[in-house]
Image (cartoon, rainbow, N blue to C red):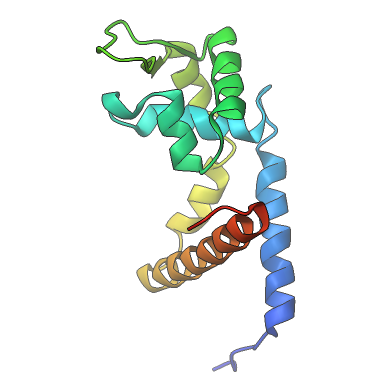
Length: 150
């Protein structure tokens, strides 16, 4: 049996950063930017009440302005549309258009999903725990840098 290879924390951090950059790069596909893919996926999987630009902004931890521009672009590309039924309130409810669902069939993240599906439950659990820790730390650093209170 082969011995497990160990990797230093700095080397692993560099690999994680490279993985993040690589994943971001594959998000430039089918005429969409990564943020647009994220928004399209979000609207496709969210329940009716959560399909608003504000809900997407909260989900991503971003300001409403840039998210609203992303949503407007998806509407212009006819991938997302205003929902037929608009509940009372200021928020505009959205839904994915047929063209958006067709595009999601060619979502560049599918290749990543295929790799993760081949992992054992133990490997997926370890990856999930590690990613949650990294996301938490990155969120804390960003909040500290931006002067935001947590």
